[in-house]
Length: 196
Image 1 (tube, helix red, strand yellow):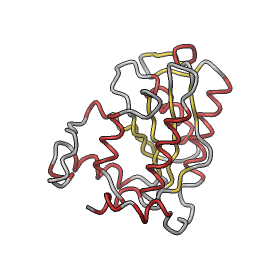
Image 2: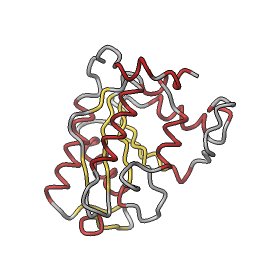
Image 3: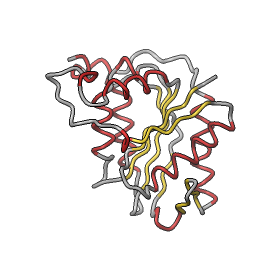
Image 4: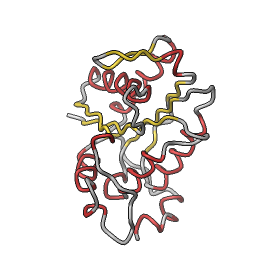
């Protein structure tokens, strides 16, 4: 069975990103996958210190094991200053080729404003550097305060078009989880920092 792991790049208690990821995971489960939402609020991940192995820092070992065990990943982020969150960046810094190479990754961005796409472009570049297979389909939820309802059991999206886009992301990450990896990208070959 395909296992899909979602990393939520938001620490807020009432996170619109977490709600949207939950919707995508619900659809991934309907497509036959086992799913898990990795809540970074529950991890002790100090800023990565490259003088030490990631496994030796905070909950680094636990994070690496969870990402490594996944067949496919969903990366969800709020949009901060036109890019993805520092919380997600730090979690990704802990990981490398061992955890990401050849995996299918779906991208989801949530914004208070109207243009969450640049954050997804930045994440796409990071995933290409890690030699992932990034889904062409991505999901963006603009003006989240108008479209996300928080509930005790998670929440939902009120806009049918946005809801369907997020659900398609959940389905696609399962459908393409076993796609044969392409040859390494140019970005991956130039990503010397990941090997340090």
